[in-house]
Amino acid sequence: MFVFKRLLLSSLLLTLTLSAQERVGKYQLADKISKNAYSTWDITIFPDGKNLPTGKGSYTEGKVLYNNLCMACHGENGKGGVQLDPYRNPIDTLVKSKGDSLRAQKPKKNIGTYWQYAPLLFDYIRRAMPYQAPKSLTDDEVYALTAYLLAENKIIPKTLVLNKSNLAHVKMPNVDGFICDNRVDALGTPCMSNCPVPSDKGYTQPVKSDQEDHLKSDCLIPPKLKF
Ligand code: HEC
Image 1: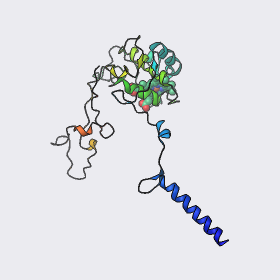
Image 2: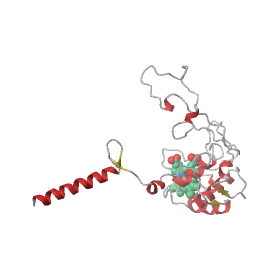
Image 3: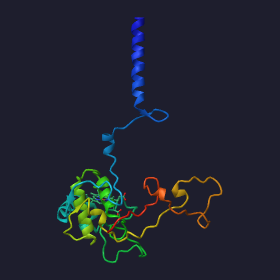
Image 4: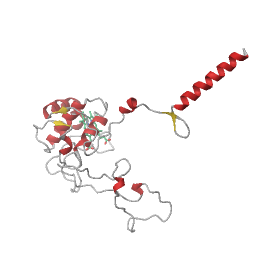
């Protein structure tokens, strides 16, 4: 009996040590995630089109999908917008109407006036829409919806079939309208006392080349792209 108990204990210890080897960090609390399991979350697409998947989609395919899956909330031709509750304004339209501008008394933010890089539209639709069923669209469907929305905004011709090689080269009207938020706090340098305030020298910092990694910096460095 005694021997049996010892055997049981040592095999238990062995199992614990073995599984601990797969655990990460100082506290050994989490299991290392496999590349395969992580891949479903690793879907970020960068402004220069990095990580865009293979596939393609046209305006005509996009129009059918839009009318079936998106119009209920975003209105006919992307020119409406649901009101989520009575205390909030309806969401912005997706498609620009004549006269919509960011400079107006009531600025209108939509794909035509506001969005900076076309690949980010693909990223957003793929990860977040339709609102009630995010990540349910195929890559071809997302290309098609992107084509539809860009063409309705008169940014690309209705005949352009979008894919991973041409989407990043679509020049968005507001591509130069953003400034880098490179205040000290935005760069993650903690300041606990005598911190600079907006009028102070040193409040903003130039972007250094080692911050060109978008994951490490809050600044969106313009991708080196020919439109
Ligand atoms: C059930 C309602 C609903 C449906 C259906 C829906 N959306 Fe949305 N959509 C929203 C809401 C709400 C937002 C705003 C979300 C937010 O700001 O967090 C939004 C935001 C967006 C935006 C970002 C707009 C911007 O300028 O910030 C895009 C692009 C978009 N939707 C595309 C689509 C597409 C394409 C479809 C169809 C595949 C779709 N949506 C279906 C409710 C919906």
